[in-house]
Image 1: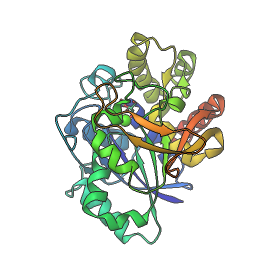
Image 2: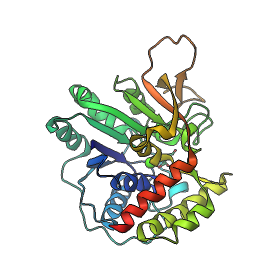
Image 3: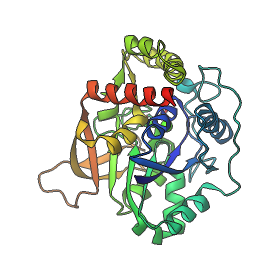
Amino acid sequence: PTPIIIDCDPGHDDAIAILLALAHPEQLEIRGITTVGGNQILDKITDNALKVLSFVNADIPVAKGAAAPLLGKLVTGEQAHGESGMDGPALPASRFKPVEQGAVEFMLEIIRSSEEKITLVPTAPLTNIALLITAYPEVKEKIEKISLMGGGLAYGNVTATAEFNIYVDPEAARIVFESGIPIVMSGLDVTDKAAIFEKEILELKSRGPVSVMVGELLDFYSIYGKKMGYIGSALHDPCAVAWLLQPELFESEHLHVTVETEGRLTRGMTVADRRKKPDRAANTQVLLGVDREAFMKLLFDSLDRLDRE
Ligand code: BDR
Ligand code: CA
């Protein structure tokens, strides 16, 4: 299996991304989970990660990372994710605790001690990853790739041009995109197409306990989506995991992508060079389309697997 580290801020869709990865141990080996301030403050989202793992009995080490972006103050996603960062289901208290190490040292140790290269799966602001590769640039060679959720070529969701994960820490995102590590970007172009509809959420709630819990997460999560004018709920973060499991479900283009950190209207925008003759070589595989039906089948089958355990 591919060894991965998930760097997240659960977060409804982060929780679903974790579950999706957990359902496929023959394909993905989760070596660890790191957390970062994003959808809610660090303590809340770390507790959420531990609760999700407890719920499915998965004793995977969790390390706490950065509480705030490289510069300035944390902007949270409370409007979408609620006061806890993962409002909705009444989950039992976690049986696990985070490890003592901070996220950067934790990732460093995993990467250094691993014989194989590690794939990073960030579904949150890129603060931890930027800190890691800035402090220990030698680890870049041992990172196979970064399959991340963030950005969008066509539009943003926090501002007209910026997507939340990039908007929260544009400086970190820029460091990651310019690192030379191969990147697979699940931005809004694809994640908005990976939307789940109400009758599918209802179907989830008629199944086993893990599916029901995900249905309850999505019930809450879809309230904000509806308020913002969307019919379905975009499964943003699960795309970054789904691509690792079934890349053939996605359409993509290889492009040079970097991040605007200064623009008055465009701070946090992912800027892709789509000219026929770009100035710089492609550094990112940008996912742009997905077979939605097949994606839903993957999700439902994966949750069924966890329900049968
Ligand atoms: C991203 O922002 C967060 O609210 C979600 O968890 C996802 O990672 C979508 O813009
Ligand atoms: Ca997230």
